[in-house]
Amino acid sequence: MSTNQPDIAKFQRAVASALHEHWVLFLVEGVVLLVLGATAVVLPLLATLALTIIIGWLFLVSGVAATKWRLST
Image 1 (tube, rainbow, N blue to C red):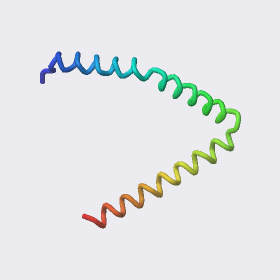
Image 2 (cartoon, rainbow, N blue to C red):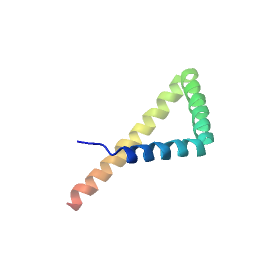
Image 3 (cartoon, rainbow, N blue to C red):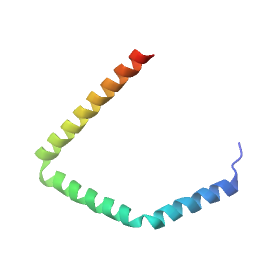
Image 4 (cartoon, rainbow, N blue to C red):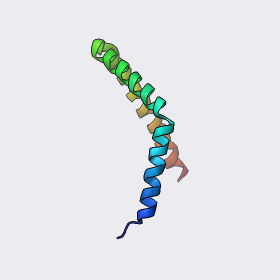
Protein backbone atom coordinates (compact mmCIF):
# COMPACT_ATOMS: atom_id res chain seq x y z
CA MET A 1 0.00 0.00 0.00
CA SER A 2 1.57 3.27 -1.05
CA THR A 3 0.75 6.78 0.03
CA ASN A 4 0.46 9.69 -2.31
CA GLN A 5 2.92 12.29 -0.98
CA PRO A 6 1.42 15.34 -2.75
CA ASP A 7 -1.97 14.55 -1.20
CA ILE A 8 -0.42 14.34 2.27
CA ALA A 9 1.42 17.62 1.81
CA LYS A 10 -1.78 19.26 0.52
CA PHE A 11 -3.68 17.96 3.55
CA GLN A 12 -0.98 19.26 5.93
CA ARG A 13 -1.12 22.70 4.32
CA ALA A 14 -4.92 22.73 4.61
CA VAL A 15 -4.76 21.82 8.31
CA ALA A 16 -2.10 24.43 8.99
CA SER A 17 -4.14 27.04 7.15
CA ALA A 18 -7.31 26.18 9.10
CA LEU A 19 -5.43 26.37 12.40
CA HIS A 20 -3.94 29.72 11.44
CA GLU A 21 -7.32 31.14 10.40
CA HIS A 22 -9.22 29.93 13.48
CA TRP A 23 -6.66 30.21 16.28
CA VAL A 24 -8.95 32.54 18.24
CA LEU A 25 -11.67 29.89 18.38
CA PHE A 26 -9.17 27.35 19.74
CA LEU A 27 -8.06 29.86 22.36
CA VAL A 28 -11.66 30.56 23.41
CA GLU A 29 -12.36 26.82 23.57
CA GLY A 30 -9.33 26.32 25.81
CA VAL A 31 -10.36 29.10 28.17
CA VAL A 32 -13.94 27.80 28.38
CA LEU A 33 -12.71 24.28 29.10
CA LEU A 34 -10.37 25.58 31.80
CA VAL A 35 -13.21 27.48 33.48
CA LEU A 36 -15.57 24.51 33.30
CA GLY A 37 -12.88 22.17 34.61
CA ALA A 38 -12.10 24.46 37.54
CA THR A 39 -15.80 24.76 38.26
CA ALA A 40 -16.14 20.97 38.25
CA VAL A 41 -13.29 20.68 40.75
CA VAL A 42 -14.73 23.36 43.03
CA LEU A 43 -18.36 22.16 42.77
CA PRO A 44 -18.19 18.37 42.32
CA LEU A 45 -21.85 17.75 43.22
CA LEU A 46 -23.04 20.19 40.56
CA ALA A 47 -20.66 18.67 38.01
CA THR A 48 -21.89 15.17 38.85
CA LEU A 49 -25.51 16.22 38.47
CA ALA A 50 -24.82 17.95 35.15
CA LEU A 51 -22.94 14.93 33.80
CA THR A 52 -25.71 12.58 34.92
CA ILE A 53 -28.31 14.68 33.12
CA ILE A 54 -26.21 14.85 29.94
CA ILE A 55 -25.63 11.09 29.91
CA GLY A 56 -29.31 10.46 30.58
CA TRP A 57 -30.33 12.60 27.61
CA LEU A 58 -27.69 10.87 25.46
CA PHE A 59 -29.10 7.44 26.36
CA LEU A 60 -32.66 8.63 25.75
CA VAL A 61 -31.93 10.12 22.34
CA SER A 62 -29.82 7.15 21.21
CA GLY A 63 -32.54 4.73 22.37
CA VAL A 64 -35.21 6.57 20.42
CA ALA A 65 -32.98 6.77 17.34
CA ALA A 66 -32.11 3.07 17.53
CA THR A 67 -35.74 2.08 17.93
CA LYS A 68 -36.77 4.26 15.01
CA TRP A 69 -33.96 2.78 12.88
CA ARG A 70 -34.97 -0.79 13.78
CA LEU A 71 -38.60 -0.14 12.96
CA SER A 72 -37.73 1.37 9.58
CA THR A 73 -35.65 -1.63 8.43
